[in-house]
Image 1 (cartoon, rainbow, N blue to C red):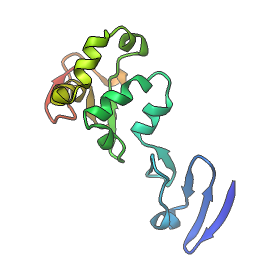
Image 2 (cartoon, rainbow, N blue to C red):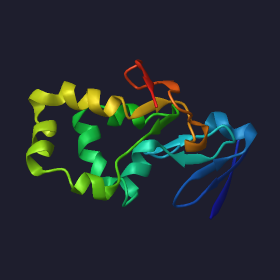
Image 3 (cartoon, rainbow, N blue to C red):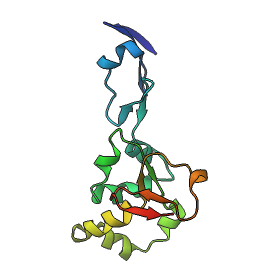
Length: 142
């Protein structure tokens, strides 16, 4: 780790993140794919986590094609209900090709949009028929 002194505080830089003290946060910017957390740490945004996780990499092409990847690369909190790698592998090639076709982008966006809710939601917090605001801003029951 390298330590440098900023005009108003300390900044610690390593190969994964930049950690800013409270005084220095106005001067800190995270590298691409990371966002500044409330406590001054640079943490991976949701798309970075999805790309780096073997269990969710199968979703990258779908999220990019749907035009949702840029939204998830921001610093807003979202919760995603994703199919497992095994479930995604069970999808036949024709269905995947259909969803990934440019002409079906709106359909793909709608399907994925119902699997992404705004804010942080833990599985234990979900009750029957709980209404959550989805990425499409349409409440959905879970």
